[in-house]
Length: 278
Image 1: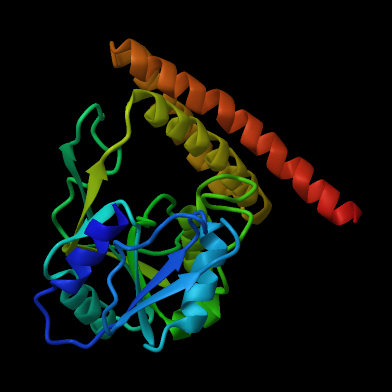
Image 2: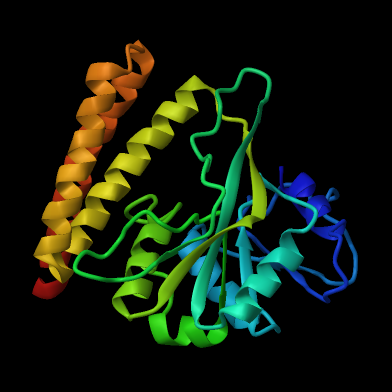
């Protein structure tokens, strides 16, 4: 998947100069002969497995003032670099998130849960209620100036971390809390590969639920109003899926999401309590 992702970045239709920084957290014993040895591609070996930590390292290593983030199981549309660059250039103090389209199902796989139907530009900012779940962690960009204001990615969130996921949710919530904006630009397109089978898809839903619970624990320390407003909406979504999906596997997935949400919420508060105790 990584090889296909990099190929999509090397074949961009753009006259803009850019570098590709790969934060490689795979097993050091595995062969990497598929990785391209080309100018503009930097392979950075990491001795850890934590997406947020890798992102923080990547920001430090990048030469440009503008940074775009793409996951290895995604394919960049041929104008992704150019679209992201001009979106950031026109809104240098805004975080840009693009459109994610689920790819065709691969052999033995289910359709990716990441898919955006929205085709018009939207802008999110903090008002009485701070919006959540508005940033696609596999397709977003920002300037180093914005990163300096918001701060680094929380290494307790994200794949490989204590709370498994929601690195994008936690960071984007802080973006809006800082008074900055998040712009959804449907012209910035990537395709998320549909590669997970039913078992790994169920595991993903549980991780999402656990991470969402921890994220809601994080929200509750910022704003009780945000916490109660979004809690009602989230549980309404879970119950709606359970009652009206009429699909046994999806009912089980959403029930698992809810159970792990509660576990993640409790784990977050226990963790914070332990940290304060230390």
